[in-house]
Image 1: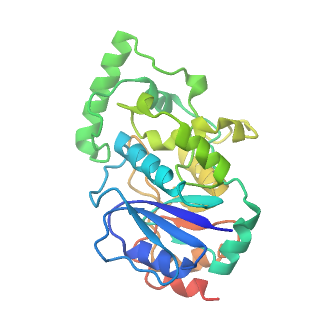
Image 2: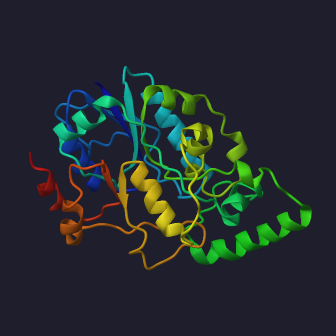
Length: 286
């Protein structure tokens, strides 16, 4: 079975090159949002470059445009299965285990159990600067608060709370579902905050098989569960710095080798996200 790995460019390709090295195979190709500058190489996989080298600001509409472009280009190939990852995601499966695990074409798309008022405001309200960098916390917070106040006063509500579906923005899906994503219009996500966390879940909301009772008052635990359902290992509990608009995942490194080693060749395809993981490759030696 041929698979395509679609890579969102988070800036820097050190981790991505390690990912390519570990999953390098004639049946696994990569689509990377970047221009080919010769820094990424593979022996057996094909590396296809889409878009440009410019880093896209997190939590903006431009991220969704990047995702849609990767999906559109990858669907031109004869792939049966697709993975959307960050350039800082790192494999937690050996190559052969990876190929065997996804041969059955499982549906790996994670939904949070509960979307709160902040999630609804992210989509329902109008934010005038389409690609404002919401991770620049000190400038973002007062700006967004002013926007929210104006939207409240004007009675803006572009989407009902019952229609807000959120989850892990990364997925592993068979071709039929990725084709559905390619067919979706994204104009209604302009001037919203962090649309990539809602796009696939809203388009494929019928894949949400249950809606368990919300018992844990923590977005962090809900996000970790959503990532797990997407076959991604993420840890939001260890994060000390909190972003007001979207929790930031803990950055794994060589110091977390023992923790990551416990989930190698299980139900986690990638760790999100990894920096300075030069020694982690030893976990995946066949």
